[in-house]
Length: 375
Image 1 (cartoon, rainbow, N blue to C red):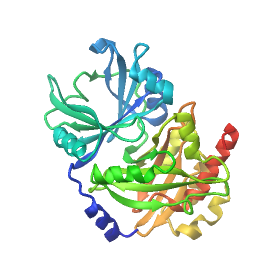
Image 2: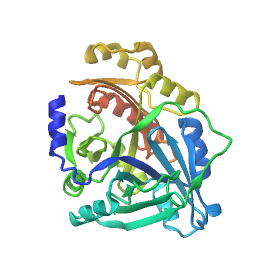
Image 3: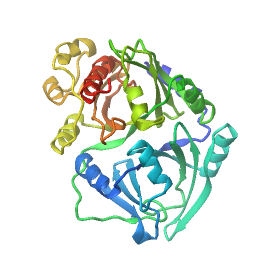
Image 4: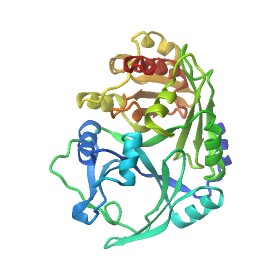
């Protein structure tokens, strides 16, 4: 896809909110304290803030982690019978909220609800000694929500109600920079419904479309459309299953998550070889492709800056579009259920999503499904 085509697509997005970027991603997890240790150790996230019993919250405990522009909030319930606990029971560990940084959270809420969004949280002002934030929220697919976060009058660590978290244990970061995109899995025939939601309710435009001819193997298939806001900082691919001989990864996700939800979080790095090497050394497991993938990959993508051998050793995939190339790799699921995982991506000019790697990637996923007995 050429630069002028991308600019035209961004121009088509109304961007009436507008969105400044991803503010934070909140995951509901069974044990936030242990999950925080995992993300520190394996992914190099740094401790930022804490909320729980010692801050006056009797319902839930949250740990906030940061790495460059990425903020993760890990939240667990403190007692039984809570909505957080039910979410974990129904879905396992998973993304509850994708928070978007906006200039005006009240305006964002009013605009999106007027256009058809289901309200999740009316605009709410929260204050402490460091100022105030305004936060509001709407529902999207499944039980996932979008918060709108307005920070212009706040200079605290994270949000009112949180205190600075400064444990002795602080492993080094590994070069993760920002959220590149986040992928949602929805049910049969629901992709266009949610494409329309992001277009009509949030002013996004469709960046790319993939059908089952693009994303298929001998056994499974899916369809996907990528939605982007006007400045290109927020990209949400939406996947739905397609008919195949066996159960696709999207069907497997829906079976185990029990509803539509966030499938994976793609995070960017400026040096994927160093980042993935560090993650592997810290115990992160990645999907692997056959060594034969690398026999012909340069014939397909052309010359690249990196030596092929370390990419081959690590299992990093390569693809090219009209603007450049990209390097990408996918973790295995990060919890017991085969649901949420991460993508590590380095863009060397490319604006696309690795279409040339789809077959190799999906065959790798199928090998994992076969081991799990869910293919």
